[in-house]
Image (tube, rainbow, N blue to C red; front, side, top):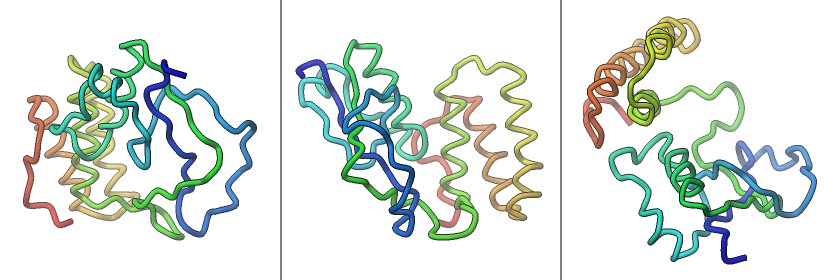
Length: 164
């Protein structure tokens, strides 16, 4: 189908989670594709443009999916074969690394210009949640820095001080 821009695999959470819920159908429409393991049509990339380099970690695929749909392209997901997302912890809760947490929070604010007071308040409340859930001052600090940079619209690699 020449209107399909992106095909992505269905992703398991980790290599031990191969028995994820069987999903109906072989191929389904999606409104958001992950950038992990996709096949993209060259004409769509030329039309939509590349994934934004200033986002590069966290929500870059959300932005690309939005732009793809806005340009009239469609996206599909293959239910089989299953892909494995490499950023998942095999067992136990997923504790984000501070640098990944920073970029995910910052990019959310960049992608939603004119953040509402409730969205900013939710980010600040998230700092308390990070401290309680992860018991990691580094993750809380990452969110504080992300709020500051996101509200300023600072994209790209801005915090080299976080440990990877």
